[in-house]
Amino acid sequence: MSREEEGVPSGTSAGDVRREAMSELPLSTEGSTVPSSPSPEEGGSAPPAQQLRQVLASMGAPETLAEPVTEALGPQAAALLTEDPWQLLTLGSVTVEQADYCAHRLLGPSPSPDDPRRLRAIVRCALSRAAREGHTVLEEHHLSTTVRDLGGASPRQALEEALQQQDVVPIEVVEDTDEEGEEEPPDPTRYYALADLGQAEQELGTGVARLAYTSEPIMDSATAAETAAATAERFGMELAGETTAAVVTAALRGVCVLAHGAGASRGVSHALACCADVAAESGTGIAVAAPTAQSAQALNAQLDSEGVSGVRAVPLPQLLECSSPGVFERGPEHPLEAGLVVVTSAMALDTRHAAALVRACGDGTHLVLLADPDQAPSAGPGQVVRDLLASGTVASATVPSDPAPDPITAMAELVAAGEWGEVPAPHREVAVVPASSGEEAAHRVLQLLTDSIPRALGIPAEETQIVTATRGGEAGADALNAACKSRFNPGAGRVDGLDSGDRVRFTTDGPGHAAGDVGYVRALDDDGATVDLANGTVATGVDRGKLRLGWAVTVAAAHGGHWPAAIAVFDPRASGSRPQVYTAATRALRHLSVVHASGPELTRAVRDNVTLSRHTCLMWILRGA
Image (cartoon, rainbow, N blue to C red; front, side, top):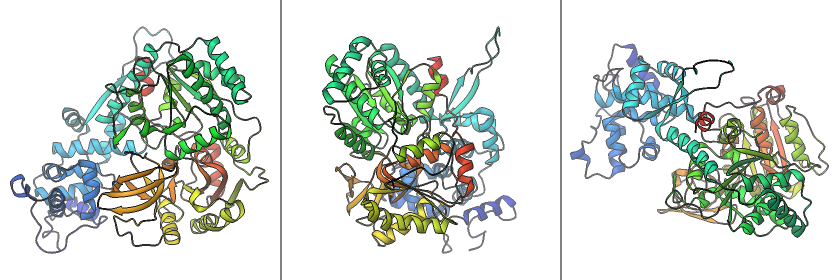
């Protein structure tokens, strides 16, 4: 089909750009007739899915976008796209040039580069991209530059349009200054956030302040220390003084962060046992949550190994009674009954989940976050624990590590100190496997998964998780998932790309499951998928669009999960950072293999790439609350 037949204006460089850009998508451009998009009157009787396919065809976009568009825009997606075709930019895979192409096909040559719909969409696109990289906000100048780079010739007008439609929210903060004796405070710095994300961050800040201001001590410090000592005697535990201090902090303060390192599993168990007795003795009750089914199962197994009874962890979405992605039944109208709420592996908490957690805590509730600050920040936007600590507005204490670390802990501590090397592993707890290329790295991973680890250590492939630095590349999550499916459960993916027996990862929370959970598909039918989870529960009626193959997951997706064995993979394209390597290493409970084809770059990354910085406003919100 010629450019004229496609409805693309000829003779302009912009048209060439649009046509070339859209060639990157598998556009539906066959035939000489472009279906017209349904008007509200014409399309009202057609099913929503059919209406959306018609609109996508009118835009020259592939039908494969129908599912992600529906997920992003909801059941009214067809009407929304007809009114504003730049809503396609809601999808991270669509570029501005591609959206422009689709808009011109749908609307003709009339849309201007300064069309308010286009400008608003570019602002949303810039902030959405930032959110996918973990940022909750962008500073005004930074955002303006990004909007201009994306094709918004008038960033100021674009921001005004986005603000007018309440697509974004402004956040002004007065940042600290080192200048002493200044008579006037510095001018505020203005940030912008996607409306829901900015509101969540502000609600999180004010909610933390609410809990801090409304709480009363559950016990006085002496009684809490005595209770901890009695708990230690009852369970035969040798309680460290730091652990007692952490328990006292949790009893006294409304919000606290209990920081720990890689080797603190025993200390965490001891602290939880003591906190449970403090809650029982005071009559407040306790609730303990972990980010995923895997992490809850691992924590409960650790508690069992220590002989601790009376306290059990549940996945966080279960505690908050998640009814659908982003929707939780627990909140101000139906708060948690427990007066002491503890969340473990709290570095996995992103801004939205943390805000939902705080909303579910009634006035006076004590909130305790157990977290390893050396880990990478959450998969979702925000750096909640780091901002809480940096704000200086919440209490903090330390849970000690075991003085005799096992080899996996020793490797993690080495990375935390900025070093990369091998550690003594007399029982093959840790193996470092160099590779000369991404292809060889992938081959080594399959060898470890299917033969070496099961044969030498007795850990089956079902209990081993591949953790990769990236999705792409020969040794990325996508390629390794394809290889694992071919090896373990070959099939054509007849139902939305999946077959019964596939190992899958959940991308969102829902009833009975958490984002990041990994399980096996038991059945696929019209009502959705049935998935067996690691903790023995079964998730039913799962939206198949929320599942991805899960033999291999990225470090971000693995956050909050723990498995008996983990294979961390770093291909030549991604040497990683210190927090990323550390987080990958700490996913393993009994065995860790590190396969890397990045040569000396991995050593440099661990030594030099110390932090993963994110743009957030939570620290300033807390200080101003």
